[in-house]
Image (cartoon, helix red, strand yellow):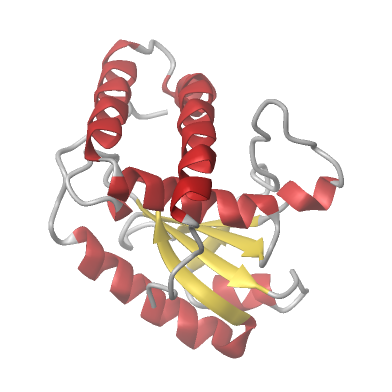
Length: 191
């Protein structure tokens, strides 16, 4: 596995997302209720891996989604069929944390495509996490520093997500508290 590389924020990431969103919209049509730029590349000023994370929100995960995304040049990654469940949150029902996961094919713009069902906790999690970091630049800066240090010090890059998850959980719990104080609701989709 190649090493994890964290790069400074790039101003072309939003444009890269828009190009991916157009391809996803063309592939999925009305199945895609929302297409959102999520993850670290969606937070202005935040250092990140140079991989665009996209969340496609659907009403249900149906059998037509995977073939449509494969035909559009995205590779399914079967081992990521559910998201990490933060401590204290119920892992049941299991479908509450399920998803489809795709990566862009070799040679295409590096991207992770997360297909999640509207209203499930994992779908909300990605949007709330992003919006909280956007609204709290000092927290985003601390998170970036953690990612840089992990990338520099981890002997096994495959453990990066596993080691990072507890920090993500802490940010998420702070984001939940913040959400109640600002009456947070997801804004309009990014694309």
